[in-house]
Amino acid sequence: MEAENRLQGTAVTGVIGEDVHIVGIRIIERALMDAGIKVTSLGAQVSQEEFINAALETNADAILVSSFSGHAEILVRSFRDKCIEAGLDNIILYIGGSLLLSEENWDQVEKKFKELGFDRVYPPGTSPTRAVEDLKTDISHRRRK
Amino acid sequence: MIRNKKLSEEEFFKQRKEVLSQWHTGKEVDLDEAIEYHKNLPPLKNFANKMRYAKEHNEIYASTGMGKATVEEQIELLQYVEEHGKADLLGLSPDSLTRQNDYKAAQQGLEESMRTGKSKLNGLPVVNCGVSGIRRLVESVNCPIQPRYGAADARLCDEILFAGGCSNSSPDLFMDFWQHSAKVSLETVVNTHQYVCRLMGYYTEHGVPMCAGAQGFYAAGIPPSLQTATVIISLLLQVEQGVKHLSVKCAGHGNLVQDVVSSKVRLNLLQEYLDKLGYRDIEMFPGISFNLMQYPVDIGTNFAVVFMNTLMAKLIGAQQNDIRTVAEAKAIPTKEDVADTFRTAKAMENFLQKQKIEIDKKEADIEAQMEEKEVRSILDKVLEFGDGDVLVGAAKAVETGVLDNPFAANRAAAGKVLGIKDSEGAIRYYNTGNLPFSKEIIEYHKEKIAQREKIQGKSINYETLISDLLAVSNGYLV
Image (cartoon, each protein chain N blue to C red):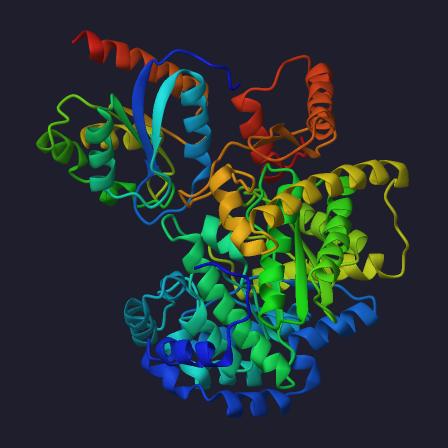
């Protein structure tokens, strides 16, 4: 953990909505930084607009949204559209956490959030290493486009 | 401007007018009448008196948060838990809209709950229920009612609770600044907390003991010295405003040597800094909760957590045993769930009450020496930053990461520090960030972590960190 590395990309992170469940995203942020990704951390209680503005300001490759309130479906509605309107045409969008209150099976949850415009969807307990590796891959694809 | 200085009576009463006008029930608060009301309550309905009684009689009282949307439902719950759970303290949790000062939305929730007969709020809308509502609650039971909540601005809610007959609160500066809001400034939280403590001081000066308390912040996965430093700072804010009775709370991690030592260090160093800064006649009541990252799903593990919590309480000589209901993970606990949990804790307390149990003295001495050094390093730096003013220093310490929290919801935290468990389940500094620690301290922690790596045959990584954070919830220590 915590090794220095050269810059591999830029990401904006935060917890969406009124939620203050911060631990998950804080661990991911550290793992990203260790992997050489520049992180703009917005912390808890972040709105869609704040995510988008921060991504524009930092010319980010990706936005990583965390949510543990169970209200994620409502909170991220039309987020992809708003990104496109703001000029973030091919920004990478990830979401992770306890996304829904009802216990649907994970495949359905993943499908639902992919339809909402997220490139990758992670359940609670996902290894940060996996998210970091996925992001590195996705960023290198994005930059080749 | 931040300063650790008692609000003048003029400043206090000027601000008070504004606070009481935030919602119409503020008009019900008459300070002189409320003081008389408290004086006519049975003495053991007063929280500080009850804590002193526990201390003198070697008793430990379980406590947990409980909140329903209406006074009627809350009365039903508290009466049931008092009778069937043999409770000695009864928690009261305000709903989250009230904690965010959205009394209008709380009013809608209250009205809807009354109309449908179902609780539509996650706690009691204290401000909307008003002084008369809280007094009905207080008069419906024999135990003291203990408000349990955190908020960046609890001024009006606490005004109503105190005038209603409650006599304790947790104006916990760092808990409320770091954990309960993302964007509020330290200065704002200092101001609201100074007000609440000044109010508590006013009651105390007029013959009604008010008990304040602090736990620091949610220190999951963080070694105790950082939490101890923030607890002491929060308590120094409280006593400056005239608070005389303190709940000194500790969040245990499950390594009993570290937890017991941590509580002792907290009490000893608090006394030392109180003396150094000239605060006299302060009464302290230790309390403890077992740190959980998430509520265990397994019912057996939940009972074990209550058992551990009670054992910790016994070992630190606590009056307060802060537990969680065994059914917390599955849904909103029923009154039967709460009563079962309280009886579990009560039986444990009874089993342990007459026994003398001690932790290993040699280990405890080493641990205490190190933790004292750590806390002193932080607090002395804070006082140096503030030129003797602990709050001026705290503001600068937050900016520079001398006070730090890796898991703050608030954006104002350096977030550099990181903890990891050692092979015996004590939490050690994996990264000391900008904490003003000597080489000796840093090496001590490194060595403990290296021992674990050696025993496990692999180095620490993020998976280790996550598994440490979730260990207790999954029924393990390490």
